[in-house]
Image 1 (cartoon, rainbow, N blue to C red):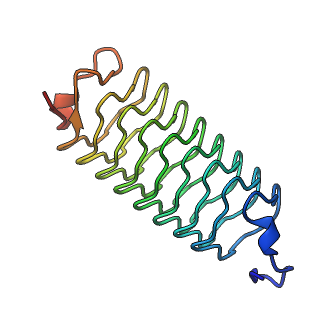
Image 2: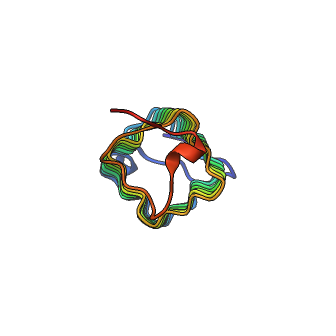
Length: 197
């Protein structure tokens, strides 16, 4: 049994893999290195939780609150993260391959070296987010707000930034290719990005 802070009932292992904790108050829970494959966590409050190394493969975290949580090396491959709140969360080395992050709040999130290959970040907000070294290959960033975000050394091959907000973005040493799509009139070279032929 996993103990929760604030004297709540422990979480049974049956609630983890393919289980349901939708809408639950799980603030401060420690689910580090747990297998939550297919778990139903929509609208759950996981603020300030330790979820490092956890596996959320194809889990439903739509509308979940993960602000200020430790998500280092967690895997969200194919997960539904629409409208999830990751404000100030640490997603260093997290795997978000093919995750749906539409309308997610990633303000001030730390996504250094994260994998966002084929992820959908359309309409997401990443103000001041740190994506240093992140892999955004083929990611969809339609109307995404990346104002003042850091993408130093990020891989942007085939990424689609159509109508994205890129005011003050840092693209120093970020790599893009001929398939990368930018907002009309935006020159990534002026922000430090390099075209890889």
